[in-house]
Image (cartoon, rainbow, N blue to C red; front, side, top):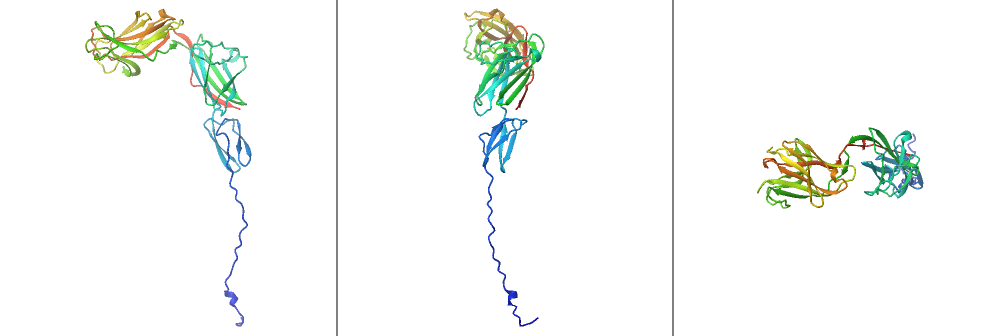
Length: 377
């Protein structure tokens, strides 16, 4: 190689010019929005991003399910809820229903209630049910569904009459609410059973009193150690919410009582008062406790209608016939007295399961299970 050749270039620094890369705009996904966060199975809602999107909710979506929807690379979620909720209750042959809409606005629904099977099926018409107002008879199956306006989340109570059963049977109650092609259905099995039927609850309030031997009745308990009060009581190992009574034993023995006023007995069917009476566990048996039931009318006349002596730790039935006072207003007086030897030792008296019901057994409908619910488009 020729040594005279200039090689300085071989050691010259290399200079690179960095030119900017062409800029590319990165557009973030839009924020999705909808005026609803709860949806119904089978309905269509509009989701707004950079443009509106129609979103079809699957018809088989289940209440409580969470749905995630992707549009334009962004996500939005919805909770599936039932179109409406329904609760039913039986009161004799009166079927009481409570409907609550989950629709975001007030809306008109079509209500169809069918009772029975095949050619014997009937379409029921439900109406508002103020207490004491007779309900219309059930119409035929040809009656079309009725229009029902429901406000969002505001319960509406309706009722209708069922034909009373006359023998052992089962029947199906079908309820359907529809709106704009959406529906919610309920199905309940009812079973006819024979037994006594509740007529009315006892009044919540009562007045208490006592009477020591040789004295008049009084509402002043003083230092007699008598007790009349609601308590949780165990008798014979069986617990009950009960009315606890201990007759007076300081300053003289006697009886104590609770007076339930202003009971309007029906003219029909004949009524009875029934209860379980017992002796609290852990008490001395003594000579037992005497339980009595008396009917008091407005003029103050008092009629003894039932009595039972309990001498062991157990719940025993006590029933009295009230048919003599059918159609009248009366008071019931429940009494706990010391035993035949006036021994008040361990007289932990208790009244449980107190109720007013039919004197004779009757056929009646009862709900057989909790029923089924479903919806469709």
